[in-house]
Length: 334
Image (tube, rainbow, N blue to C red; front, top):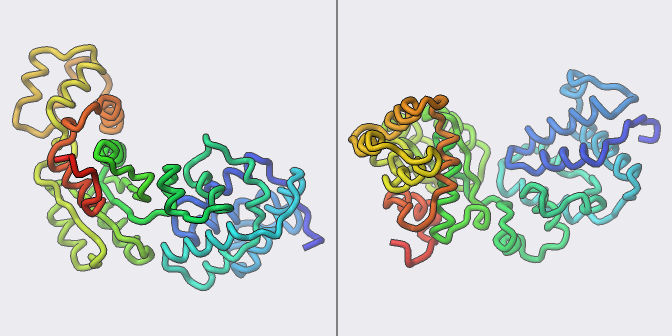
């Protein structure tokens, strides 16, 4: 490796790379992406294009990328380390979570000097980077996850149709004494009921963890598509009515609109009580106000800011949280 010519990565580039390497994604996908980026941009000689790397043995890719990372860390004045506990723990974790090929395992068997640059990571860093730092000294990794709300190591995946659930379920769950980040619950927004099926089909082939699937009421056909592949460790919840927005208590919706729109009119108040899909009503409310188009993500953020008490959690939302947590929530929540 002594004949390699390298353009050192900056501190910021190293952090970005480590962040990508520790996200919740199949190791083969994320490691190859990061290693390809590093080798095409920072390995000056020999010069490889992505096309060349795609034909290369995984061990060589790992060795080259490892060299670039460690050379860069050394150039920043952080030296090297012979302590590879973090590397081993990352390997053990990924292997426990995902089904890995021998080639992918080779990517994980690297000796990148993670420990040398842990000072780059602070309390403002992403949850996965803070988890990476904890791996250097942790005696009980799950206990550290709980105490520091690290989300990692992930122990269950929740697949929902949209961003509303992704934003609000963790917030409602906190009010039930069940913090997703503390418990290792990772929620994914699929982007629609058909995408839920595709994502589940993909994950079930590669993931060892249990999966909880949340579907809108109109997704019965999609539920039937999932059933043949459903494992004993997985769970499906089909909403009893409409979409997730329909589960939000009326008082919470009215309070949110009152606060965000500077009071709602008598007409708008009456509209909210009509027995039609909540989203249709909200679209009309936003339209009558001459506001921009109603957007589910923005409204979910509004609702999140206005959750105040346990009364803001409907019975079905509570049931969903209990199912995700296997009943492990505060006993005083009814």
